Image 1 (cartoon, rainbow, N blue to C red):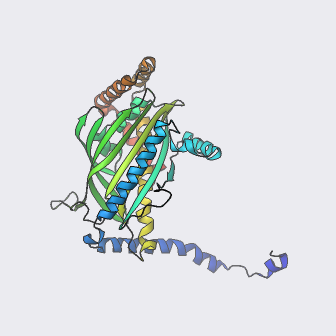
Image 2: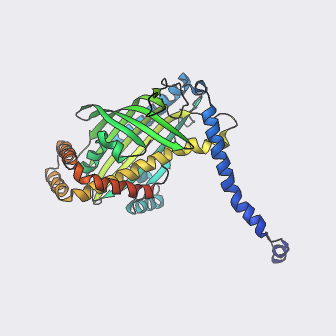
Image 3: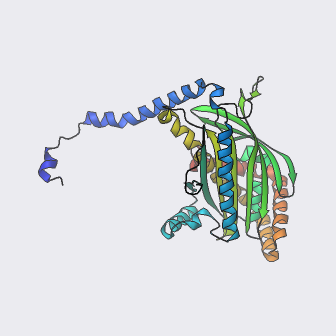
Length: 360
């Protein structure tokens, strides 16, 4: 116990000491940023080869995770991650969602209670949820499936986007990711996506990458692609698991993102670690916040038509009619794109204010 006399004998911190301490942390961060850039740029490409053991570990992680997801759905357990939280945390999470915030949390799947070791790699597992007031399930799915225009909706994180193949609830899409954090990274990816319309108020989707290649000199005449798994290792694999539910006068959206990257070289964790580990969280936050803003923006531009579709969907209440409403909503997006472009720009600006620094 510190007595009053003891406290009085303690020397007061000088103003010079306080000033030095206040600038020390920003200086350290700046130095770390510079060193991280130097280290990343100096790393030879073969230093980050994707090892078979790392790929096996990632596949094992995904297998166990999907088994848990399937078991939860089969036994009708909590639909969203936030629903499984203790009562006080669940109430706080829903309060944040109603305020328009993204609720995000890091997860870890274990193998019989043990952490899954990833030789030469790191697994990043994040889940996030957002609430879109006034949005229907069909409206939300229509935007999510509008892959040809993700380059407009999710700029700057998505620089290019294109549907390569679409059949029913299955998509093959190409996305070019752009990230500038200490260094600029451009990555070409292809994703196999499957949607499942559960009923009139619930839907889900799963996607996995079928190709990931880092781009050199993006946008220039000498642009080239690194061989898969033979690059700086900033993204080797990525799976996403989406859930949608229309309730409480809007639609809840949850995304769980599991990605595989290179590990952090020994002795450089304090320099590179914060940057490698923060990008997946920032990208997921940005994706969900932008989804919310974009759906709200489109809702403002086509509120009358969307209300009519919502009422029709509610009156039918059949699973197949959700898919019909999504198709109708997609057609409305195409027909009204010129009219709604200015709304999407405004939505992007609002999103930027919500999620500074951070799709994955």
